[in-house]
Every structure is written in C-alpha cells, then in structure tokens.
Image (cartoon, rainbow, N blue to C red; front, top):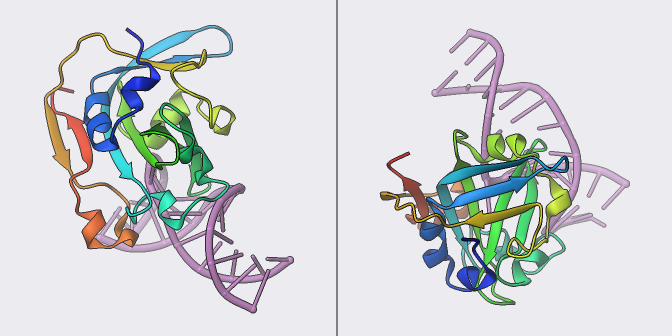
Length: 170
DNA sequence: TCTCCGATTCACT
DNA sequence: GTGAATCGGAGAA
C-alpha cells in the first residue's frame, strides 16, 4: 500500500517514527526497481528548531519545506553527500523527516549514493512521483529513540532532543 | 564578490 | 581518535 500525502500531513514527530519500517521504493531510469526497509529516521521541526535548516527562515534552499506534505527535500552536505528528506505538515509549516538508513545501508550518504538520489528529484512530491515512493506492507518495527546526529552547532537544547528513531529489529 | 562551514564518510595514526 | 575531501548556501561587505 503506497503512502499518500495525507500520511505526511501531520506533525513530524508523528510521521518520523511511523516511517521506520516502511518500504522506500526507488525506480531507476532504466526501469529497475528496488525496495529498502527504512531503519532510521530523524525529525526536523520548523523554524524554532535550531537544528532545522528552516530555522534561518524561508530561503531558496528551504522553500521546499514550506511547500506542503510529501515533498522531497534533497540537499548537498560537506560537498559530497546528498541527504534525503520528506516534508511533513501542511503548507507553510517547515518540517521534514531525514531518512538516515534503509535496507543494508546504515548512513544517509551511503543510502543516497546507492539509490542514485541527487538534486534532480528535489521538490518532487513522493506521493505522486513515479521515480520514488514509500509503501506500507504491515511490518511492525521495535522502535528506539536517540538524540539526533551531527547538529551540535544547534546548542544542547536542540541537540539533545530524542528525535531520532531506530528499528531495533534491523 | 568573498568567506565560512555543514543533518558525512573513510583512511590513517 | 583525528583530519581530509569538496561545494553550494547563507551572510557579510
């Protein structure tokens, strides 16, 4: 069962843990399709979240996070890795879920490299996209929570929030 | 224009 | 445990 935009039209703290255990489906240009079970996600919640790119306000880069539920937010980090995010909540509320791991890939950079994800699918909506979507096959993960990674610059208040969600069954 | 730095990974000590 | 690779966005000037 494919997830539609109403699934993403909720608070990111509801969506992020529920995305763990879902199937991330990627269709390549040559027609090949692969499905990977999502093992780890993180929540980035609006302008007040100092770790969220949108904390700086609306800019060309963060514009997609204001576009509404289900939009794909891709950005380059450290000049070499693409990060994959799914926007949640209604229009003009900048929240997103970072997909940190899926299938046998245990890092966001490795995942996007394996799936050939780059800026060219930035801003597309994952609920109506033919190149990538998410399915629910009824799998039930054992959730664990932890602080988010690599955001010390946001200050302790935000860096310590338990907004990372992991499937212990892996 | 120019400078700083990051939602990472990997090789090396 | 430490540091390099590498580049576009954001803010300063």
